[in-house]
Length: 522
Image (cartoon, rainbow, N blue to C red; front, side, top):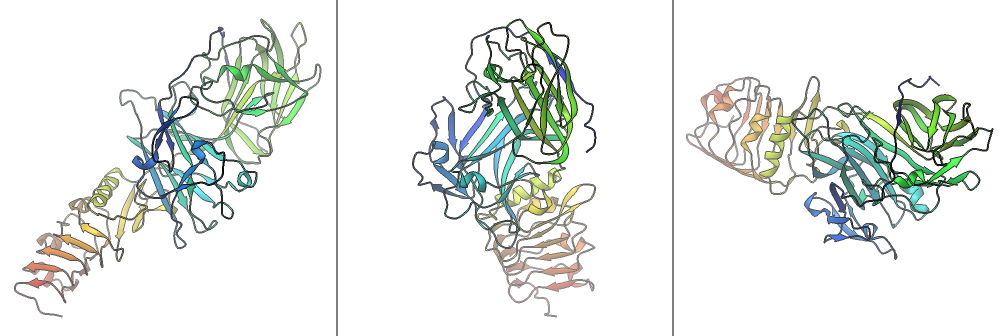
């Protein structure tokens, strides 16, 4: 294994005692499949998901005694022939007057009650393949599952998508709840969110047992899972606050600790039962001496590599690395140090580890805007026309083909024989990289828009619709056009001579239509 990157931060703060206060969450909590909003026992307001997504089906679960957020879900149709994604669209905030990127905690939760085993599917955020959802182990244990990511706002909205893939298991992707919480600027601020996002691997409260630590103790409703150790767990003898820590952990994570035996190292596996792919990870470890006005020196090793060597005081220390190489099962070792008058053993209170993944480029903004305008003119657009049209490449919109060279552009729009009804938006003319348009065999009506600026267009197939009006003169100026199929519409007027006289053009105007004069049938 390669040596971890020597990129490490140490923060020490004077932590002043304070009373626990309530925090208001900035964001939106969505209970998927529920019909009305409600407030839970923690004072958190949950909204129905119908205002954030237009596809999918609600389902009520029959398992008794479920938390409200797990008593309903929304599922999305599985397609056996091609991968498809279905996206929630959430409004985000970005301060255009600041270079600092706002980041959001996004958590998706899942509870499945059968029949059979739960399906396996992908999660996508803003065109980035986040993770595969496999809840089978939790389902067999009768538990819910959740996945969490810290993701930057790159525009006015963030899309969170569930994506069914026929290469996985059969079955409809589903979701129980979706949390979208804006974090303060200091939280996880060592990560370059212009280039990276962070997927949670583990967040632990060492030495604790019982319930998960969450809101209202954690102002962002982060989940701190108990990591019990009956032999080495200790309780602190004083109360501190964590308000000065950049990541703003809840105060209670410092009230419990795992403490090694005096004079001996303590090694344990963390995260538990998780074999990590070799990559870079964000690791943050939290320490506070369990004795008042005390300090102790010790070292911390991760898989045999020194992560920290120094003092921990009752004022508190957080040690973190935004890029630390991990691979396989991870062992955390607390080793005794020197220099403490009491020769106190090493300890640890809490820890977080995130996988880092690169942010991908998105579809050219003008192409996205044009496709959304086209969607608005169709009364029954394809169900998966949400999120980024071209990203990730394995989950492009139905009927959309893209090129991924200098920019991500839409080059083909093939919506033939989909039973669509509507008009053809003039915005289609702004998809200037288009090579092929096929809207054949639908129920499009109205005029053919001016497409003269589509210089790369080679094929335009509008046959078998209900289009009216005349053929735009501008079609004859498209030099690369070699196929134009307009038969079986209700078009009138005169056919442009530039089309009739183009020997390289495969032009089909009959049957149907009522041109004047009527050109001869080839």
